[in-house]
Length: 305
Picture: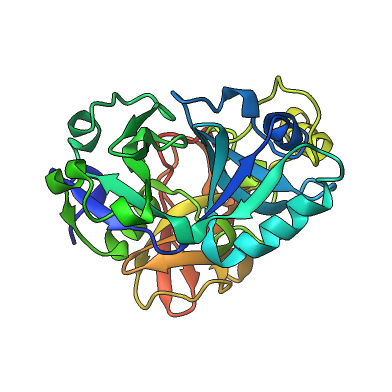
């Protein structure tokens, strides 16, 4: 099977599962600042950020990218949950001088991957680095530069933007395999809404948390989990030998349940695994069972567990 993480060819993938929420108004930054895990003041014309919106108890609700497009902030989010995100944001709008719009119909989100993708776009490997291009915005994935770049383009320009001619169009499977190889979660496919913790899901190492910003919803639990060393499980990539288990299938070490499967494709998947089951840093990768398959965890190079 082709390894998408080291491929030389450049590809573009239209991510039809992504939506856009536009926030405009003089208080748009301060409005979001009290709600999300990252520092919204860092979202500029030159930089996009990755952030999460949590419950007051610090459990996952949404994740998204935040970028600036002129006078507006754009949230690149899960399309099928955009209306729910809009509803929750509106609950906190009160008298804030902002305007919220589900602008999914106005934009398309495109992933741009391949060994030379960033150089072709005139970007270096600095996560989040952004610039305007051909009527839209292109930026290095703020989580990990190995994920390539993302472009947010007006829908009427998404097929004709000149820079896209340097990238061969391919299907969403390619992007899915790349993120699975790298161990990157995909929103509510991999995190359980109102249950998952950011520190179990790699948000710290994936630049999704700013530890120096002011208070935000769910901050207390997130900080306590980090500083008290309360992380006992981690979401991680696994190699699957056998039929791909469905998301939610338990993972066993012998007779002991030590985790559960999340999203997967072909022989790649993510799983939430108890760290104690992995052994020490120098231990060989153990093999576990899930359904009718064997699964072998693989520690990603960007992670600290």
